[in-house]
Length: 324
Length: 244
Ligand SMILES: Nc1ncnc2c1ncn2[C@@H]1O[C@H](COP(=O)(O)OP(=O)(O)O)[C@@H](O)[C@H]1O
Ligand SMILES: [Mg+2]
Image (cartoon, rainbow over all chains, first blue to last red; front, side, top):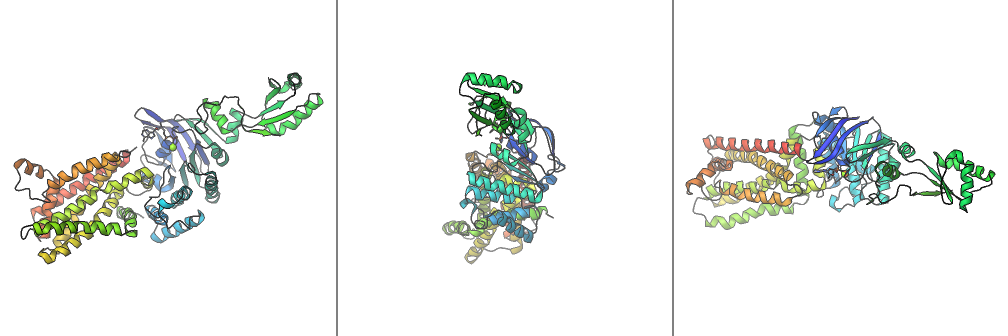
């Protein structure tokens, strides 16, 4: 569905996208994850024919994004970072003219607009001026516009940025439902870790215009960070004794605590606790740390992806402790 | 399937729709030049309506279509222009549709101006007037497309759009003899007017409204308008392709 080779875009001296090789199969849901300025939007803008690449090639839905722009445009939907619907327009009008732009007849465009208004929960606001809609409503309207021609491939640039958590969840549900129903291939960008984690089965991490990792969230986490089990003891001596009992697991001792890197940690904890008890050094407390995509990003770049977070967390700070 | 014409119509009706839903602004802007005319015409010597009315029509069309890019500035910022660029709409249709949205209300206004002036002795030939308006429309599509191009070039810098638009519009008008005849001016001014494509369009309008259809003025006006239209569409499409 998408095939790029050395896709590159330079703005004067900014290397916004710096040689991206990407291949997306039909039906995939892919999230491009990266901090602001990583080059996500620029990548999407090249793939949607909005800007010509400085170098490299891209085929989208079977056609070249430079030489066969019209063919590409007919087959894709694009929901940009801004608002697709004109602020002085009414939602339904915009949907209909969007349908006309894709060659639907007046009647079909009207019907399709009606269907989308229903399914995206816009019935009450579709005949109001777009400028009077809330952020969440406007975003759903943008999505409806991107879907008017039932594209086989949909690009969404930061679909949920700026929305409150409830609207964000609502929007994610709509996107997932769309995919389940029509098997649309979806490429979205986000800088929300949880969004990439929960929605995409493939996450492409982008930094400084390059792909630095590309895998399922689970495998990214397992490969780059992995689970950790932290065992707490009453005294350092207990910890030291426990460490020798568990030597096969290569525990790392930090004072009265042992940290063990262990894949599938939650399933292994009961066994480890039993072993410790049998050895006469029962643990006083247990914590299982499962990595987030932020940990993955931190590991790969030395910087954190969290909002406003540029390299302030030390690498061994376990966040998201799960008590057992 | 779509064609350049259906695409232009799609863009045109999208642009026009908010106006139709809120017709007050349109009515207001249409009545404005009538007031202007009402204050100005009594000052004119006898029979000069014949010379003056086509000029007024050209002027209001010019003002309108030079604003084609101004709505665009906002839509570039909000993202709806980008959304339209991703659709398969033909690029020239984006230019033509937007320019037509400015021109068509002005043609309604032209009809109004003519209707108001006839009782005061204005005479016109219908076929000539229609041909005149078509030539004017071609010129205005070109100018509208240039205004669009200017908006693309000045995105994120609105002042640039307004500065260039204002700086160019008035010399363009004055150097075409729209409001005052050029013939009485000094030689250098007449030479400048000869280089101004709008001069030929205005001359053609005056001849055509008078019913002088098969004249060299018509031909020159047609060529000037077609040249501006071609230039505008070329520049606009190129700017869309290259715009970052
Ligand atoms: N039109 C442009 N002109 C100049 N620089 C740009 C332009 N668009 C993006 N950039 C720069 O390219 C880099 C990547 O931007 P972008 O693709 O928008 O990142 P992201 O979407 O990941 O936040 C940034 O440094 C940005 O400032
Ligand atoms: Mg972006």
